[in-house]
Image (cartoon, rainbow, N blue to C red; front, side, top):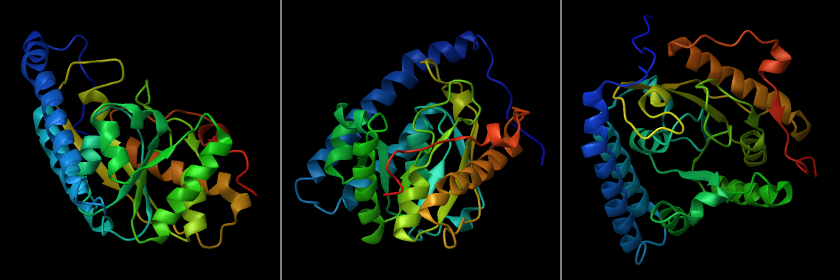
Amino acid sequence: MPRSLQPRPSPVPFGTWLFSYAFRAPAFFLSTGFFGSLSLLSSLWDKSGRQQHAIAQSWGRVITRISGAKVRILNPENLDGRIAVYCANHLSYMDTPVIFGSLPFQFRIVARHELFGLPFIGWHLTRSGQVPVNISNPRASIGSLSSAVRTLKSGLPLFIFPEGGRSESGHTDEFLNGPAFMALKAKAPLIPMALIGTWELLPMHNKVFFPVEVILAVGEPIETTGYSVRELDKLTAHLRAEISRLYYQHSWLEAPALPAEAQFETITLEGTEQ
């Protein structure tokens, strides 16, 4: 398949820069404030979080349009809403709007705990039943992952960025093994997904939108039956390998020429074997 995505120009054309500062960025923040306020209002009577999630889906679609990106989903049949842990690489602030706007079913996200302290976004996360995780504190992390397992067992899919933060280079980074832990404990599959284009759209430490086509490539489910908790690193390596394969298949970036053991190194959460 030919790759339509190209590197982001540096600097971006002046017209793109001006339109981003004059329209896209203000509209981004105003829309986030509007939908965040709407979500908070609905939380007064919606204790299930379902209306708030529908508002977040609308927010994601509007924000994506404001950014100028066009989203194309590959293998959408794998987004069937099954109870699973949906995982994607993390490149940009635009990843979350794209995910909310693209996944056609109710889900809850597992996010870094510091995001829950942000205005509007944090308020929505807290009131809509999302799951915070503190990756800097292994013991707190295990406790929050157990909360995520309960969410899965209650009948709601989960979404998580396994890298725990955005990539500065545009390449996939090391994966935390929290998603594998959650999936194993809940006896649920992992759904690998690759976001391609959001780094070119709005990379880390940049405030200028450069409209491109964004691809969400969805892989086949990774079943967790047959794995034990002692094989979290192996399962996490499998997940990273599949997301990386999907990503580099469509990105203009070339996959790093690293030994397999280095390329798929994982970060282990202490206490996961207890």
